[in-house]
Image (tube, rainbow, N blue to C red):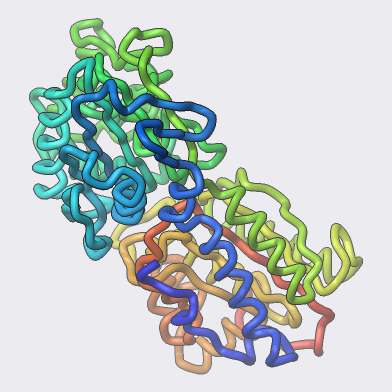
Length: 471
């Protein structure tokens, strides 16, 4: 990984009364990321001996393929491509994978290009069009390997007929601001794209298609990860329009997007390919790593360094601020009663929260907002540290991987003249946590399997007078 947990900004006083706990907590986060290193995950799954390629339990006779293409998109695309090159080497005829800016890694057979995330840019459109063109050259004698990971929805861009990049950018911004879930966002993306929602598989057919997925979506639904370009799409035009109505964003979407959705509802535009479509008859999809793998690795390391771990869920969703209150409540319960796990405890929750932005929001991401919200809920407590980590090392449009909090966080900010309540109101957690040295900084980790939230719980030290009332 190009980033490293070693670079996280920690403050010993906020972690535990025992300074040796500082490194222990860091190793838990390191273990979680190491377990989902995309390169190692693919090398454990993909093997080639003579002319036989083994992918999990499936075997392919490479002698029957004239060409092998590698395409893909996502934040973990570069190390995934490196792993495929390690296995297949010069057998690869051509390849193109688009990754987030600053996520490039050296490759020899597969070209790596960069684009922006979460809002798409012209580089993403150019890459998407090149991938589509490459896919359309494949025939029945070819093998196509698709590499998909988190961020693929924004990076694999090919606007549907009649739409522009500006339309897609405006739609993405509206969906991010309204608090739509990733499932809802990707439902609209699929119906406004020439690649998403199984349409890359349609372009590849009748070639043999192998898709390797690093999951960044709660529950790992294949049709949602990177907007499911190589698998059947279960969503419909009606589902897409329901998202628009749910969040009342008709006045925030471009007229071309609205016109396309209405035309689809009226049956004037064909829907995305559904389960049973013959374009998927020669396709295999394999998840190589996900949030559960990371969470279980974190639990194993927590036990090694003296915590009693408990994995509560990998289906965590909801508004970051509200989720924070629940996590703090669980931590306080464990501290008060030794339930649901004895002290010292490490509660682990995986998933992905959301933040509904207001007008003129500040800077931050869902993990930073969760951490600062937890800090407000923890005022007056001791012995509890909440950590919220974006496994890709980038929380929202920032250079932070998330944040951490304890009962002193708000007081430290107050001593600097900062109000946690005001920063939360403006969704400006980054500035507060940066000032109090509570940001997590890793740089790009080259993986992406959702977020992990930790509650490290020990016996309370002393009563701390609250400096600011919860909002």
